[in-house]
Length: 256
Image (cartoon, rainbow, N blue to C red; front, side, top):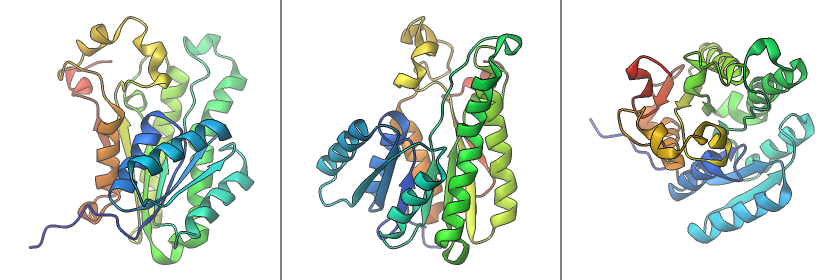
């Protein structure tokens, strides 16, 4: 049996929330493997800087930046249209996520909780619907939703965020059932990854956090990017409806 390839030459990808951190690392890895990449982000200037950095790192790569709010249906349509302009939409990575509230749920501002679910779950579904109508319905494709181990185990500190990621994980399973076999839908659940987004979780120091992981380090954006690139490739052609933990063994310790 011939080994299936993780090469993505000729594929067209859309990565949301790609200005920095995990999203940027994913966009970079997909481009390195040959995909044309559309990157989204809320702020135009940082997004353009990220796109320029990606082009400089991967000479010859097709990279498009589409700035806007992920909750805006017109922005989602424009981002998907940009991917279609690259030859179709084969790959969708729902990476955009927010965490505007922390602490006990009894003290949570419900407006912030609603915003968390709107961004982390509803907008992700909106992107999938848009991609489906724009071409995946007929030509197939691969979707990866970036979840979190906070969606698999209670954390206390980031409870609303964790609940939204649990919903995203369930959405992944539902869509894998509804959209197969042409469209594969998976999720990746990172542990603590060293990004600006995780600053609050690293407040006690990176070394202290690392000691709570069997691998004795926190994650890097590239750890997530490599897994995502595999999941959207032909090498993962019989994987759908799965949530892949990339957490340095954190949940194997039995707690958060």
